[in-house]
Image (cartoon, rainbow, N blue to C red; front, top):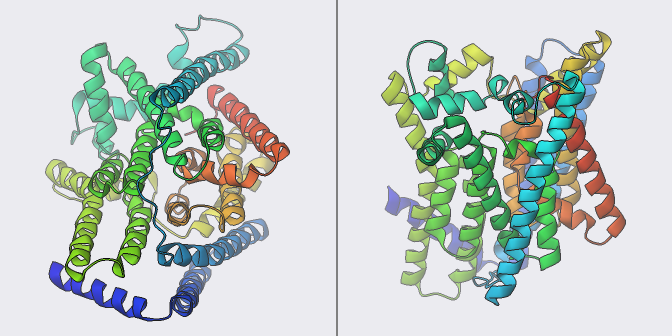
Length: 483
C-alpha cells in the first residue's frame, strides 16, 4: 500500500512538473478555487435545508461569516499554489550568529515574559479586590482570583493525580487529552503540590513558547518584527490563559516547535512535536496541513534537481514523517479504548454531556448571534459579556485578520489558520472561542504584517488588544462564564 501511494505521488508530481510552470500553476489555482467554491456551496445548501429556526440577525451574521471566509480562501489559494511551485526553498537559517547577541535577545524575552506574568497577577488581584470589596491578601485569594475550580484546570489536575477513571463525574475526564497532565505530574515531583505544579508547568511552557515564537519569526523577518510577533501573541485578549493550569501554553509551544523544526529541514523532529501537540489538544492533528505544505514545496523544488532515486527517498522520508503527526491522536484513541473499551468514548461524552458535536462554522455564528441578542434583551449581561459577545467578536476579528493577510501571510501558516478556524468554530456548543484562538500563532504573524508599514497601525492594534485583554480578564475574575 505504501509503495502504491509513493508511485501515485511520483506520477502526479511528474505530470505537474512536465507542464509549463506558469500555466500549470494557473490551472491548479483555478481547479482548487472551483473545488473550494463547490465544497462551500454544498455545505451552505446542507445547512440551509437543516436549520429549523431562523432569525434576521443570526442569518445575516452567518452569511457575512460564510462570505468573508470564502473570499479569504479565494485570496489565499493563489499564494499557496505559488509558494509550493516556486521552488525557491530556503536553506536552514542561522539566526543571530553571534552567541552573545542571541543570548541578549533571549534574556530580553525572558524578562519581558516574567514581568508580564507579575503584572498579570497584580492586575487580576486588583480586579478581584474591586469585585470582593477588598478582603483577603494576594496569596490567600490567589486560587479564587483565577477561578481554578470553575474551569477545566481542575480536570487536568485530577488526571495528573488520579489518571483516567471509569466511575463518578471524573469518568468524563477522558475527553481531556493526557500530555499536559503528564507534564503536571512530572512537575509535581519537584513542587510536591499538584496545583503549584500546574502553574509551574504552564508558565515554563509559556516562557519556552515565547523563545520559539521569536526563533520561528526570525526565519521570515528582522529582529524588531520578530519581537513584535512575541508581543502580539501575549497581548491577545485571552492570552491570560497561558498563565493558569490549562493546555494552551503547552499546545502553543509544541505548535511553534513543530513548524520551526520542519522549516529548518528537521522533518522527523518537527513532526514528532506536531504529534505531541495532537496528544495535548485535538486540533494538533491539523498541524499536518502546514507540514504537508512545507513538504510539498521542498519536493517540488527538488524534483528537477535530484536524481530519481534520491528524489524517491525524499518522498518516502516526507510521507513517513508526515504519518508520525497522527501518532498523538492515535495514542489518545488507544487510551480511550484501554480505559473504556471504546476508542471514541470521548466523542460520546462530548455529545451526551456537553451537547458538543462538529457542525458548520457559519451555523455557530448564527446561534451565537441569536444567544447574544436574546441574553441582551433579557438583561442577562453575565452570559452576554462572558460568552456570546466575546465569542462573536473574536470570530469576526480573526476572520477579518485572515482576510486582510491572506496574500501576505506565509502560505503554510495561512493554510493552517483556515483549517484551524473551521475546526474550532465548528462545535455545536461553542463556549471558548477567544481561548481557542489564543494558540493560533499565525494570527500574531498576521498582526505584524498588517501593521509593519505604519507605527500608528501598530499602536492602534496593540491598544485594541491590550484593552480587550483587560476587559476580558476583568469579566473572568468577576466570575462571569468565561471558559
